[in-house]
Amino acid sequence: MRRGVIGSDVARALEIVRNGGLVGLPTETVYGLAADASQKEAVARVFTVKGRPNNHPLIVHVYSLDSARTWSSQWTHSAELLGSTYWPGPLSVIVQKSSVVLDEVTGGHQTVAVRVPGHELALELLQQFGGGLAAPSANKFGKVSPTTAQHVLDDLGDGVDYILDGGPCRVGVESTIVDCSLKVPMVLRPGGITSEAIESIVALDSIDSGLSRAPGMLLAHYAPLCEVVLVEKMPEAEGLVGDVESMKYRVLDASIDPFTFASAMYSLLRQCDLDGIQKLFVVQPEPIGIGLAIRDRLTKAAHGSKNQSR
Ligand code: TXA
Ligand code: MG
Image (cartoon, rainbow, N blue to C red; front, side, top):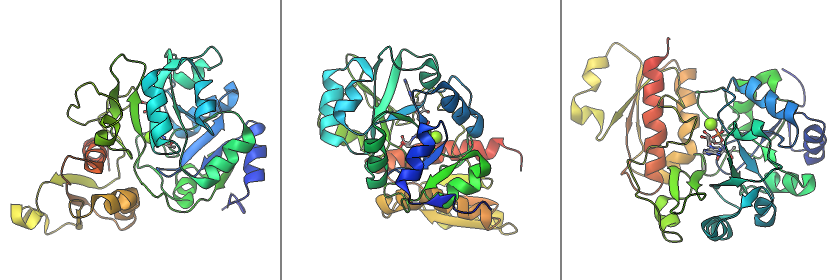
């Protein structure tokens, strides 16, 4: 293992991003793989390291609402209301991009996603940096997102130049993405800020199934190696566990305390793989509040785990 690749040295992280390098960025949701959003080659490297298709847009992380406005040619009233209410925090807004935003960041789209993350170390780095950091979650494309510095190192190894260790992520699921470029804003991905909380500030276009549909959000995503089976009640009650007596299985219950479950969810999925679990049953939470984000991610994990070769 490379020595000193994980640490809490903001000055070192700053120097790396300024020089076009990649930094593991702690946020309150998941760790990001951050590059200077104004350097083409650095942004291109993010896609290569992640193994992500080039047309899947990245979120630009900034220090403040003032800074966020500069990334858009048409900052909307809904973006202003939501940003001023929930930033710093687990919310990304989509707005028309300004001419300074690289096509490499938006995947050729005319809109850009921006957010102010609610994490002290990330904010310290962003304040000193002054610009925007384009950062997807710091995992290999389609796999389980990282919520600790060690997860980032396990997934990306040499691909990342330095990982700023901000401890385990508090929220544990990605930011809520709201398309504020539309006349009536729409939630494209449920996340750390609940749809109910968004709706208390701006009227939303119908809350649908709660499954994310931002570009690049495939049905199979967030997938561990083990098979994920979603159930509404404890599997014993549904007579399912008996079917799998000969395999290593595990049961997790997301319905009792969804907030605590969300913060641990990606670590728990990773642990199943480390423990050689073959089949994971998860009792789903109610489809409200943070439960919507959990159900979204688990539904995709279940698809991904069915579709990959073991
Ligand atoms: O919490 C988060 O949002 C984390 C942390 C690191 O900030 N980031 C994250 O990034 O989840 P990523 O790349 O794994 O997911 C961002 C999603 C993409 O799948 C993409 O669909 C959507 O954001 N997105 C980005 N720009 C967009 C745009 N212009 N229009 C629609 N969707 C966009
Ligand atoms: Mg991701």
